Image 1 (tube, each protein chain N blue to C red):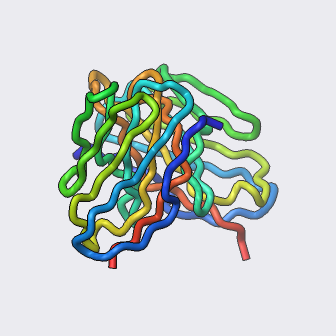
Image 2: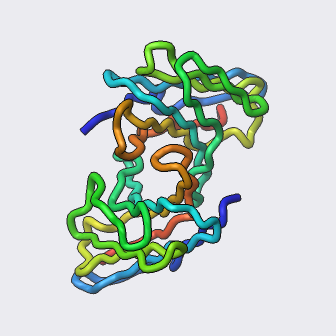
Image 3: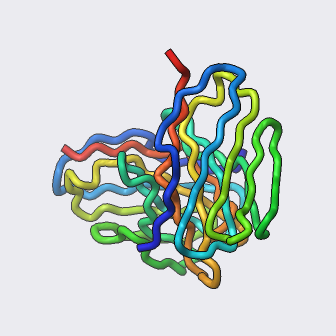
Length: 112
Length: 112
């Protein structure tokens, strides 16, 4: 089936650092979503994007819908300890009445 | 937070036994979904519903059945549980279709 490539798989953050992650595909999407999942809980929607080139912020989080419609980026500015968790991208294929396709996640941990 | 509950939250069962998981929503959303989450695979769609008594298969539907007799409830049944169905199961709801899905807290199922 269709796949989303999410990178990096994992990363370590130090408080105050900026963080970037992305999702790419060979297919075109008409919706991009970013979720965060804490241990033992369900994913929580952070940002939804619906138009190519769209840039949307939610507090310290900023996400962009790539111009090619094949990618999306999530940035976290000035990270804090509660940012740790797993971040997922998800997208709906252009022209599809089908369902969301999920990336495999980026795990954010605190630097030892 | 979207009003989604899942029951039970944890279950241990034996191979060959039937298991039913329940998802209940108070949002009156049209669409409901069942996913499983496994290490290395991310979130994978099992079945979904686009209305009362209207359901369809997802990516990994073999061994699972669903029913939706009321808008607020979506049941997932494992007719004869197998060890490969050990997983964390998430329900999600959406008002507009595949985009902007909201997730429940999950059910951890262990099949011995």
